[in-house]
Length: 209
Length: 91
Image (cartoon, rainbow over all chains, first blue to last red; front, top):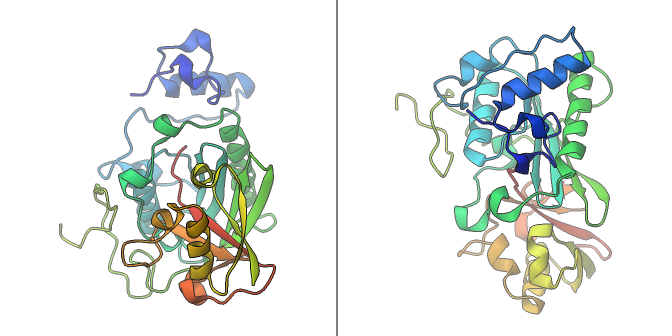
């Protein structure tokens, strides 16, 4: 699906110039296996959607969310709740990053933290606004730490805490994120989750639709 | 109360690039309106047309989400920081 482009290389460090045009999943696998041949790398060269997400995430212990749009993030959230898999969330925009861990029904979920996505006119995409090239590495490294902590049950994962990174004033801040009892996905009276393609509002779909 | 309003990078162009704006305000709503009075356009990005907090913007007083305090009516103490944290989705 997605292939390596030279414009990716300043931030997507698994690839290099020799791999321009190669499928990203294959390039990523080559780099990772060159570092550690004992790794088992499974690739899915497809767009994550309502039709395949439950099959793809099935059996995994942790989901690391580095997707680049709101509808997919809500899709990942709802599917992770359904499968009861924690999500290590990282998102970036221009000079700032946000990292947290969504542990289903223990801490808040993505919808508790962000009940609705911004309308398009208030949310320029990264393609329009750009991302500082080194920023994904910083946020991704923190996501890797959180993932290792979850697997090894070490320390205090970022459950119920939002860690923000601001490259311009070089600061990290932590904010409390609470579980919303009225959350439409994980709240006390939430209806059963139905996985469906989301429209621009990313709202959960009523059962049966 | 003298408080500091912290702005994300996506709103800093509206205030001439500053990451923090000191204002005089009694509540969170006052603080947002005070920044908007000095730099018009900030309130539109944070509040909807009914004056409610937009659902994709989290506002924290110290490190507490105002949705779990008293919303825009949350009373501020002198020296506190109000952080505006809109959702971002880039990856």
